Length: 163
Image 1: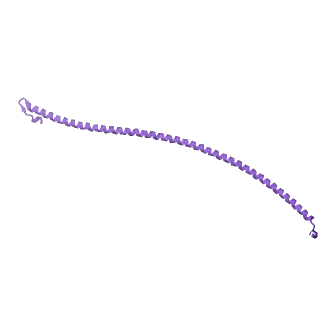
Image 2: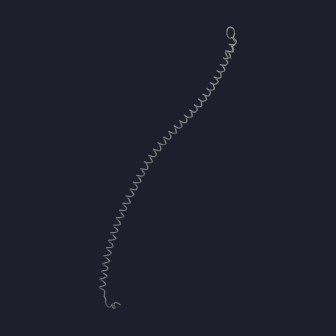
Image 3: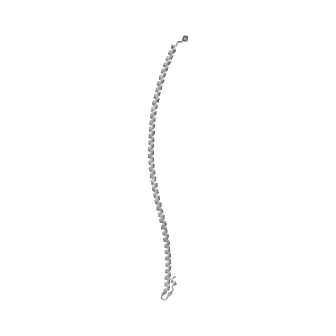
């Protein structure tokens, strides 16, 4: 209803028409307020739903963050353990390498000592063979001389007497 549609009386607007206008306006405002309240309720419910979704997402993200931090700690610890193990393995391999070198050095020294003993034995054997050959050669010369002397002393004539 518009103000122009209000009935006028002698002293102004008629009381019933004004009350009716006020009542209509009040109903109209009440409807609009109810619609606004309903919209606000819907918006509040949507906001509450969104808040709950965001809180759930926040909890999920925090749990994932906690899990990822735990994994990061595990990875860091694994890296530190791996470095420690690598250093221990390097130290152990160096010690083994040094022990192997020492073992090889000792074996080489023993073999060189044994080789020196063999060299001495070969030299002694050589001297023995040389002295034996010299002795045999002298003995052979003596035997040749004796044979020569016997050949010269042997009778050359008729040997029939010995028959």
